[in-house]
Each structure stands twice: as structure tokens, then as C-alpha cells.
Amino acid sequence: MNNEVLILILAITTLGIVIGVALWQRARVASKKNDPERSAFTKDHGEAPRQNRPGTEH
Image 1 (cartoon, helix red, strand yellow):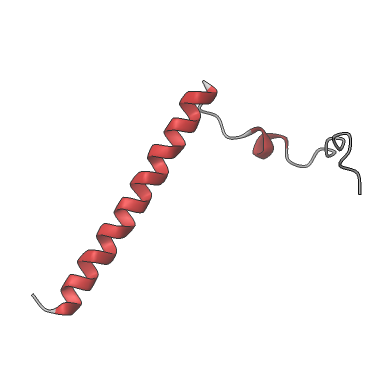
Image 2 (image 1 turned 60 degrees about the vertical axis):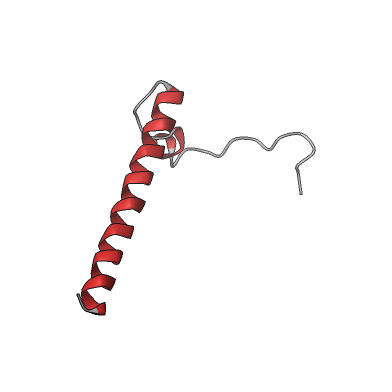
């Protein structure tokens, strides 16, 4: 095999591993939330922001 083929194989393998880890972590978060829905931020985006916590006003 020449180097171009090895680089292509490495790139595809790396991309596959990254996508696999991302899906695995997404599944872990969904199971811990007991809710496979997207985050509350995504669902509630566009509403008024919450109040600052005490002591964090700038």
C-alpha cells in the first residue's frame, strides 16, 4: 500500500471513531436524563433568559 491509501484509511477510521464516541456520549446523557429528547435549552430557546443567581450581577 502506498501512503495515500494509508492516509485515507486513517482519516476514515478516525472520523468513524469520533462519530461513534459522539453517539455513545449522547446516549449516555439521554439515559442519565431519562429522556431522549434534546436539551431544555434547545426546546426553550427564544424565551426570556432566567434571572441571575445572587452574587453574580455585574
